Every structure is written in C-alpha cells, then in structure tokens.
Image 1 (cartoon, one colour):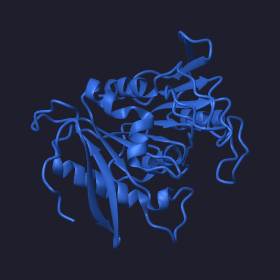
Image 2 (spheres, rainbow, N blue to C red; image 1 turned 135 degrees about the horizontal axis):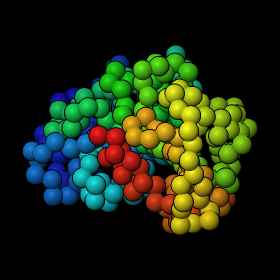
Image 3 (cartoon, rainbow, N blue to C red; image 1 turned 90 degrees about the vertical axis):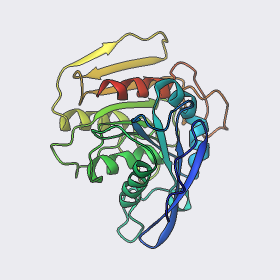
Length: 269
C-alpha cells in the first residue's frame, strides 16, 4: 500500500503495507516539534506476545522519551500478536516484514544514516535476536527487556551494542531459565553469549542509585554489552508504574528503561 504522506509530529500514525500477500501494519511516532526535514534516528519498539503497538508505546513511555531524545519510533505489529520466534518456517517471515516496515518508514521521513536501533519487550525482546542476525541492514544496538536471547546464526561481523533489562521475579521468562518451552536457558547465559559473540572480556560493575539494581558493563563504546539486573521486578517494563496482575507484578520504579536505552543508542553514533 502506498504511504499516505509525511507523518504529523507528536502523534501516533498507523501505516499499512502488504508483505508476502498479507496486509500488515505498524505505528510510527515522530517527536513533537519536528520540522519534517531534519534527519531523525529511527528506533524499533516491538511489543510482547498478546500485546500490540499502541499498548507497547504506552508501557514503554517511548513517545515522551522520543520527544526528549529527538528520535522517531517504529512499532510494528505481529500477526495474531505473536512474533515468529523461535522461527517456524511455515509461518510468516517477520524479519522480512520488519525490513519492509523500516523501508516504508524511511520513505515517509528523513532518517539518520548508519543503521537503526531496536528495543522490545518479552516476545518482542526475543525477536530482537532474530532481527540482529537477519535484517538486511545490521542494527547498531538492541535493548531487550524481559526477554534477552542470542541467535547463533548472527554473523560474526555483526556486533551490536546490547543494553538488556530483566527482573529477578519474572515468572513468564524466569531469570534462571525454565518456564515455557521457548525459554529454558537463563538470562545470564544469554548475556554471556552476546559477550562472547562481541569478543568482549573485561566486566565492570557500575554504581546505581537503587539497591535493587545491579548494572554490569562488558567492554566500552560501540559493541559493548550492558545488563541491568533488577531485583523486586516481575515481568513488566522497568519504570512502568501500574500493577498488571499476578503474572506480571511487581513493578519497580528503580529503572527508567526507555531513558537509559535511548541515551545508550545515542552513544553508539
């Protein structure tokens, strides 16, 4: 489907496209006050299973963060609200869909060159590993929230900066592993897989204002791996203030994930 023209600044804009014979959609957000001409960094924001783009934008507080950091946000929608991960060859190719959504967004507004960055929650976080491995244009950085994974098919020359967040009380994607068949391996195992892939060794612990947060950093500059372990946090976006029910709670205000990741994305150039 043809684009409908430049998106209005400060508003969510829905765009449809046809990918492999299916009508798909994504939501695009351009920061308030954008002049329509200046190039913007583009950040992908993938929803979790059973969720959808507008809900993900609300949970992540990404629109307000995008206004402060001057980035555009593309939030794609999975078919039946679940990403094809682990990959089922018989199911739609979500990597191809996200690539087409990026291309469409690039046709709607001027975007910064040099690759894009991406975040996602839960199932959307797991999907980031597939995007890092398979998108035609490599991602500069990824920020998986409550779902960090590593895809062994990721080419050795693709070494994105990784900024991950996970709560130790997560009952959907348990910190130590187990849970649903798609999960099993623990969070620290996935973090270390990225550390090895990116060729990193040194690890430093950074101070944090909250006793609930352990912030570790492997390496420096682009290609580093940062991890925020958040105690007393369930399966919920860090900083989201509303209790969501037993499966997701408890929330924890100690970390504002959107602010941290957008600062990190800006640092990788």
